[in-house]
Amino acid sequence: MIGFTECLEKRQIVDMILLLLTYTAMLYLCMILFNRNMACPSFLLTAGFWASSVVALINQDAWKGFNAPGFYSVTIGGVACFIAGAYLNSLFYSKQKATQLELQPVTIAKWKYGFCLALEIVILILSMYVVFQNATSRNPLTAAGEYYVANKYGHLTYDPSYFSIIQYLNIGSMYIYLYILLNNIVCKWKNEIGLYALFGVGVIISLMQGTRNTLFMVVISGIVMFLILSSIRDGWIPNIRFSSLWKVLLGVFAVVALFQISLILTGRSSTEFTFSELVYTYLGAPLKNLELYLNENHEKASIFGGQTFLQTYKKLYSMTNNPAFNVTSVYKYRWVGKHSLGNVYTMLMPLYNDFGLFGMYLIMALIGFITEWQYEAIRHMKKYAYIKNSVILYAYVSFTIAFAFFSNKYFETVVSMAFIYVLIGLAVIHVVLFNISVDENGIVIKLHQKHQNQDR
Image 1 (cartoon, rainbow, N blue to C red):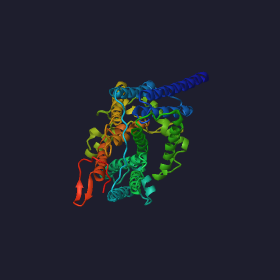
Image 2: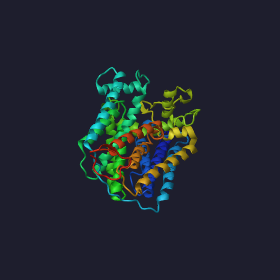
Image 3: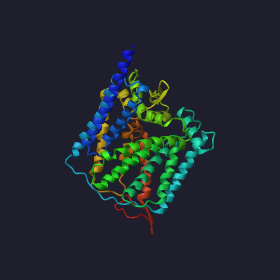
Image 4: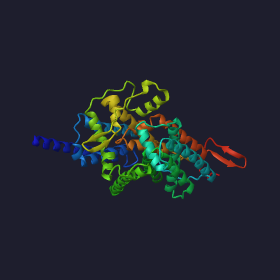
């Protein structure tokens, strides 16, 4: 029996090493196929799964490897199909040269800073009111943590529909501010203090729910946005070099450390996880959760894409009380012995649950095709507009692709009702900042902004 156990453990280690080596080969393939650019969707997706497989291998003694039938077909096949879909789209641009454009600084009238800041303060007050109605503490940090717990377990006593809507509107405005900040930094142009204030208040609003999703969304999106803007300026020269790998690794640990700090910012105990537990839970556990799920039998929901569109159906159910939208979630918190795995399963699990193996392959290839189309459109744009919405939208989507190893963010924040509110937030702030001006004749609304002249 001991010999059999040792043999099984060695087999598990070998399988996990093969998984890591396969993802390493895929990562290298992405470098070859997509001009060694870290911002391309295939590299973002594969890098996430690669990092997850590294952590899973390191922690294999506690998690006992991956034993589920079909696990490698799902994990390797899903990523491979995404890369194939992206490469198919890139072939349409293979004979076109990526363009190099001169970036110009974005300047905003000071009165607009005041208007947008006043709007944010209204949203902040409304958010704080909802949070305090569900908390006993009047300390904002503690109250945010209490709100998070109440919302997590369905114990909210006051839950107005406008709360989630204004949060999504805030996300849209944050992406506009983030774009201007990074564009000016790439242009080596000094940003106004008011712009940092707008972005900072937006971050505070996003933390009022006690979650860290928006914070990390803008961090990852900001990195991608900076890479894209730098590539536009530099003519899309390759930005993946072996000498820069240490910076990438340092960035990964910095993001994990930010998770630890954000526990305090959202009113949750910083001792909830140790640093190593954070790394294992957030980087490696999604693969283990997926493997445990594959070892079980789950029935498909009667409604189309029940798990894939779970968050959208929850919203529809809360709005209509239609039992057809009341989908039972297969997500659950899991443990291996005393080791917590959380309740995230990668993007692949809901697709596999709803559409089967080949359905998952097809959808992953389609997402790869669409996101590569977004990326290539930026690489080949002929004219740099005043505010390039394509850069903002790709940066928004890029977070969901980079975190596909973690959860189903693509169908929670892009192909979802939430995305509509984010677009409205983007549109409103875009109009205020770039389509409205004040001159001697009063307020002027311009439908098209053609030049990058300083606003008044």
